[in-house]
Length: 385
Image (cartoon, rainbow, N blue to C red; front, side, top):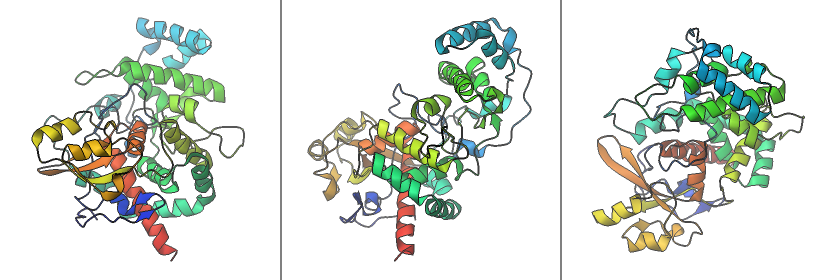
C-alpha cells in the first residue's frame, strides 16, 4: 500500500480527490514538528518536536516514581501561589496537590528527541499506523458511532473518517490511553525538564496548572487522571488545556467525558479542527512534483508547512500540480517527506493539512491521519456495495 506510483485520479469523493491524490508522484509528506505556532496542540504526543515513532499513549507501563519533594521546593511553592491566583483556586490546595506529584525518570527519557543522525522514513512511520489491526478497529468504531460522526460532520464539516483516524492513531480507539499519572508526568516535565533539547518546561507548567483547574471544575482527584508520558488524556489524547478550551459535551449529559464517551470525543476532535481552520469539502493534500530548479524548490519549501502560495505561484516556480489543485480556493504549502536513504516525496498541503498539524505538530502525523482516513473511507464504501 505504500508504493503508489500511478497518475492521480481526477475523480473526487466527498470533495477529496480519489486517494486524496496520494498516488501519483508517490505517497508524500513532511518533516516533523514543522512550522510550530504559538498555540499548543491538542495532543503533546508526536508534536512539540518529539519525533516518537509510535503513539505516546501506547507507552503504558508506568515505572516506579521517585519521591520528588516538590512541595518544599521554593520554585514550586512560588508557582503554586501564582497558579492559584491565576485560576481562582485556593493556594494551599494547589500546593497540596503538587506536593503529591512524583518525579518519573521514564518521562524525562521519553520526551527526548531521537539520537542525532536518525534518518526520517515516512514509509516506516506510516506502516505503524496504517495497518490491519487499526483499520479493522477503525471500521468497527465507525460503524458503532456512525450517528455521532455524522452529526459532527454536519456541524463542523470535518469528515467522519478524519475524526476516526485521529482517534485510531492516538489511542487505537481507547485501547492505549496511557497509564502514567498525569499529575506526575506534568510535574516532572514542569519542574525537572531534561537538558539536551529545547526547554518546554513553561508549556508543561501551564498544562499542570490546567490539570488542577480541570480537576477542580470536575470535582476529580488530580492524582486520578491517567494518560501519556506527556500528560495527554483520554480517547483523543487532549492536553488539559485543550479539554478546557475545546472539549464538547456532545451527548449532552452535563459533562465533557473524553475517557468513556465516544460522542464527546468525536465532538471535541471535530470542534478542535474546526477552530483551527478546517474547511468543509477541501482536500487536505494534492499531488505535486516539485520544481527541478534548486532555487525554485527552496523558495517553495522555505515557509515549511504553512500554506503560503497560490496554485499559480506553484506553477510559476516550476512545480507540477495535480489538475484538480489548480483552481482550489486555498493557499498551498510544499511539504517534503524524507524516505530514509531514498529520495524525498512531496505533497501540496492545503489549510486542512495545516489544521491537522495543529492537533499534533508533525507533518508525518498529519499524513498518517490523512492516509488512514482515506483507507477507512474506501474500505467502508467497498463493504457497502
